Image: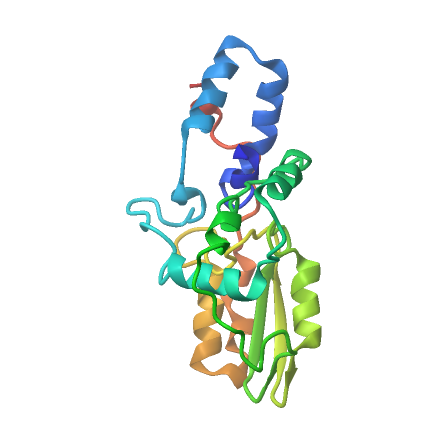
Length: 222
């Protein structure tokens, strides 16, 4: 579960290989480090590596009620039990088991009936921009390509794959030096004028940070 959570953060995933090594060696010093990660809960800064001084309290505009409403009414497979979820989690190399509470929640949640557009192919007149990180562990690239290929629009559509980016590619696309995440810049440029494709000329796309497995050697020794 710890490793699964670290995979989501652009910076945090860099310590996964080190933790596996420490787990294999398992010295007294390693135990202290492993316990530190085991005790760390809800570390949102791993999701937002750009924000160093004042990490946000959560995902902007996030609503757990709205999320549960959609998941339970439209996405949840009702026969799935807590035992099913635990089995899938136990047989996975990496995982978080974040939805273990949903089977019991489903029994009393005020579900709504999905509308006429439910489970249909996206059809619109709007310009579309799809973005996905090529190392996203939650929505892999093949999923994004499927969504892109199946979407129908009378205007144009584009798929932007971010190299080394994880989930939440709007945030997990850090740049070298100072600047907003390139994914965020791309969305702003797209919304400013969707048809002009200004996001294609962004200079930040040439200043993307590469994943770092080395980290700070001095802090690692501590």
